[in-house]
Image 1 (tube, rainbow, N blue to C red):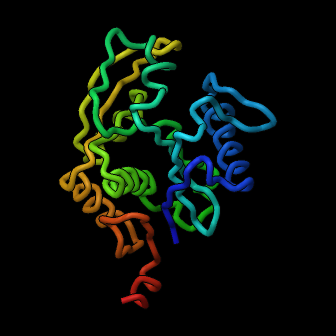
Image 2 (cartoon, rainbow, N blue to C red):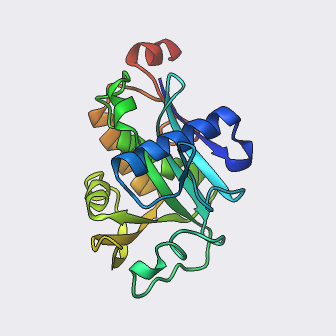
Length: 219
């Protein structure tokens, strides 16, 4: 079973905290070589605070994927860390989220029973379902060119708000991800076409996927 849940920063157990920051270090520092803060084998920064909510994707209790949400009315990476990359950034007032530290751990995924599943699509859907469940109007994020292509290929009708250049002189993009029913259904349809797993909570939160046999037994 693959389960997506949310955990607030202040509710993280010591085991959850250790796991998420250790895996993030392996992904963002060791594999991607990002300029991130690391200490004692963990990656974390000032945006891991009591304004933060994490989305966890777990398979048999093992963390496969995750992302970090912060409401845009609080200090965010977009308006601080990434601001010098762009000539002009404006986030409108409203009930919006910033998404950051989005990852899928390739090594853990390969060792899992969901290695052939569209986990990225499922994590995108988890974004929408969580946002809908809390009444948010949409999600902003800074993405690389390769991630922009992945998001577009998912079918999600995102908007490119601004293009910038990173410290590595690579193109980066501020995107807006709508969390309406139309985009939710697009992702649901694409997941159903590609996945052998089934779910009776595709349009709700929390989100979980089960093997066909388990799903049939629940019916």
